[in-house]
Image (cartoon, rainbow, N blue to C red; front, side, top):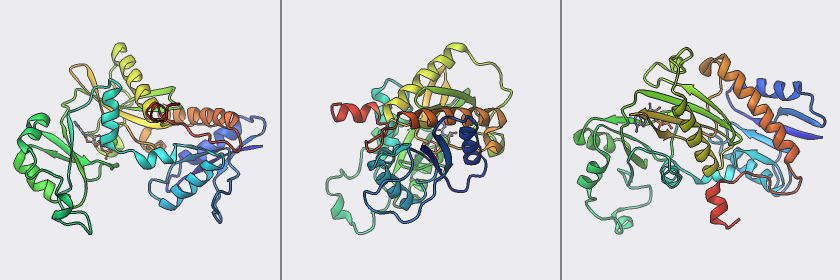
Amino acid sequence: MKKIGILFGMEDTFPQAFIERVNSKNEKNIIAEAVSIDKVIQNKGSEYAVIIDRISQDVPFYRAFLKNVALTGTNVINNPFWWSADDKFFNNALADTLGVPLPNTVILPSAEHPTDTNSNSFRNLKFPLDWEGIFEYVKFPAYMKPYAGGGWKNVYRLENKEEFWDKHKQTGQLVMLLQEEIVFTQYFRVYCLGCKAVKIMQYEPRNEPHLRYVHDGPPIDKKLLATIKDYTIRLCEGLGYDFNTVEFAVRDGIPYAIDFGNPAPDADINSVGAENFEWVVEEAAKMAIAAAKKQKPGKINLTWGTFMKQAVGK
Ligand SMILES: Nc1ncnc2c1ncn2[C@@H]1O[C@H](COP(=O)(O)OP(=O)(O)O)[C@@H](O)[C@H]1O
Ligand SMILES: [Mg+2]
């Protein structure tokens, strides 16, 4: 018997539907259930062939649990080691090597010194930085957001330098990206499961949260759809994320990748809508079943991106 587990937090629709869907397929020797955790002992395996992780970004104890079970053979989706390592700035840099169009982006030292450091800790940093060069490269209006963030927290749209200085001061110890604004005509949020199954969803980020997924939008150019699909798969393969959403803002017909490391993307029926929900539940169930069949007990079964594979020469 191979077990598929799902680890989740406050979600009330996707995990339950996922478990039901996997079990409704009546695959021989495969069952799905909510992960149950009791005492966690070093290098002791979990009973799961596959775990879909929807919450460890908010619960460090769960992240540690997942790394431990990954070592003993569980295929954790998404890879908890990679998820601990990447950030938006690195992901942008990697995306650039993959040929995906991006807004011009720089990373900035935090406005305040990190705890237990002082100006001596920054003697390697030029003072002042070449701010004019930075502003010229990024241009205003610009977006400023945490280099490792999500959920629209601390995301600023800045009109000019003055606003930049004012807002940057308020970001404290956060490390921020400063990024060119893409003034878009279309925006897409794209689900990608197993680096294969792709669902392109029209999205209007300027609407109120419950109206952001567009369900009866105009038809989209086929070539644009094909390009978005291609970029989405490149990004997910590069990063090694099996369960991800990728966002693109389209300017002059070119899709620019805006936010593409969302390894526990919103899958709630009340926000994505019934049709997208059905797609995610079905594709996630199929992906998890395939992963369970492929899983080799006692071996490392994680997905690694092309970047990591190349880095270790595999
Ligand atoms: N460079 C940009 N150009 C245009 N809009 C952007 C840009 N960066 C962010 N946004 C807007 O801000 C929103 C939140 O930014 P995002 O990078 O997705 O952060 P988070 O990871 O917190 O969701 C995006 O959905 C988009 O609407
Ligand atoms: Mg986003």
